[in-house]
Length: 221
View (cartoon, rainbow, N blue to C red):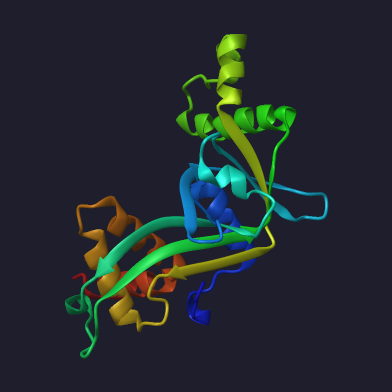
């Protein structure tokens, strides 16, 4: 991943983003072309701190045949938003796109049946917890036959994450005036993506907006 230093998050922030998002694109090379599948995942950590990404795919997915070969890429994207050059205060600006993305890379192995059962329960618990106070769904609600059929229809994977790359492009390099102007215009958009990027910009450089508040208070009669 190409990332200018100003947009590069540290390793901990990249992993935290990936875990919070929990959905990405697993990509591998089959020798002739790339193969990719969108899927949910969760992270766990080995005793030495090495991250591991766990997920599963349908048994007939072409990715199944590629486990144990070359490294895979798990690409995790967050919110994104187009920025019009007209939103800047400074002249001679160009349009751009703001976004958050993290790439996890490493070898992948197939999980055993027992490990797959744990993976299914852990993955569903991760996302069911976000629906609280709803009572979580668990695999225990399935009949034994239905659960076994589901397990036979999928293959679980564990990626040992050897490389973590991130790019949080939020216009960090722009002046306070331009930064605040872009964030304000993004916040005024109706779509969720631009609004989320605007909020992330406020979190990344809160001093910019504190100065705005101070200036507004000074001008209030």
